[in-house]
Image (tube, rainbow, N blue to C red; front, side, top):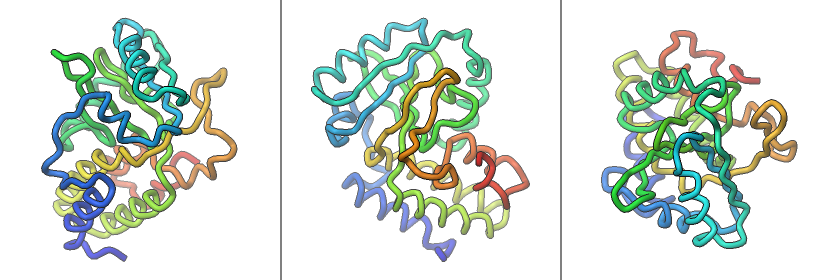
Length: 227
């Protein structure tokens, strides 16, 4: 098991090994840079608010940077179920230091946009779509899922003050590990559906599950929350 005092050092080590940079030294990248940091074979699905013209910008950039990759942009109207809950979700994520499992990127030269990465799409879809914001649903590598799971198990054994600080560091580091995340999935009649070749749902860690774990006093069954 991970020792509580080893968590910050381990997180920095993981971030350095995945991205080559310390988590405290991450500049705001352009979307082109983010896309180039991912393997060209990774299929990406960006979901944006229908009331913005961001979708067209992302699609044109993706077509140019990752030619031949399975990159799609889906528009989602603001009237869709779940959008009303987004300000609260974003506020909670921002309280932890920045976007949970996400980052800020420059899509247009004069404006920054938030991109949130989820390790598993959750029941309420979408999770992080606001004006000038996008969501990328994705699958984390199995080894990364295991590491995160182990960290969270260790956090569970800490007292509340320790959990608050360690959680913030964990969320900050996770947000910079997303360059290693691959996306798989498809759209169905009921929204996002997980492909059958991905694995059991218990292997996934969703953003909402993580938030619930942090704010809910009943931690012990968090892994099975969405099974």
